[in-house]
Length: 445
Image (tube, rainbow, N blue to C red; front, side):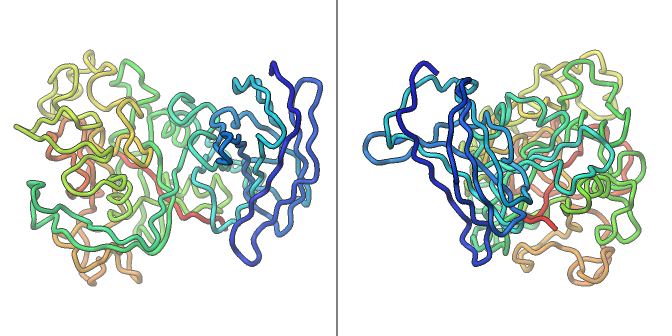
């Protein structure tokens, strides 16, 4: 930095539970290379430790410094199980080249209990053997600005790391399904009130080619000739050919050991219960807090002749050319599968209002539920029997599972957040229409 810190005001925050972790900053010093070292003590551990920096705007309002605070190392942004820790912050690396007068800067070192975690969780899958450290693969961040390198600019979140966003859904009452003016299929999208009982993490991106390749070996879709690794992974099945999402005689109560979900649970020492989202969780996330005839980024529908230029995602009419009218001729068009055609590069369209990408179009995404036309009576509960995973909540046997969101060759009408469809989990040959994004509780074991 060009300037000198005249003084630093250090603050600490703690979670609001009786036995919550308690962080106390015990010292702040500056090294010759301008790295700032913050020492802290931690009571009631283990805990997820996060770090933030704020400046005073002069009107006694504290404002985050943003991405500059993501250049940290030490006992931070991870699960800490020690009585003491150190955070090292290098402002120069974040482009923060300013001096601050006394009382104009403060640090926040916050401890989060394992059942109430920060808004962003990152899971490193670069090594496909279980980590010797119980929580060694996990990193946590309070805001999108504090995610190192940026959610989209850092390709690792689509290559070797899974990034999750917390949905603050507990106790929120909202209208699931399509209302008047949305040109919906009322027999399948009947509007009804839903109140979810807990928050949850959901993937910022659908699973990509690269991420599935890490988990399963060389299964990258060879049809794609441009930007292959970053593309959303299609042709993900529940059973049949590799890679299965879950596969198991009584799934989802007992996913098989060779399934994607089981592999991910094993990589984290079975401390994270990865799963597919229920369709209520999926729709809540896809809407981004926008209700009525709107896309997830708040843009109003303007659907005409199955087109909508405001649709934030890859669909049939916003590709470079309408080169593939049927998945039956998909493979014959391999030379044309460039970056602007077919399954998209993850994150290449605008995020929704919750910071989630590719919720509309791209690939239709598997949900946990058995499909039933009218789900109004469920109040957002998963349509699976609690005692028998082969049956629906009403006790009848399920036959197909829910898929949501539309896909790259679907019309705009089929990419709405309320659009519901069904697919057999034994299907083989959907080409790249169907993929998934993962979900998990906001708690660790």
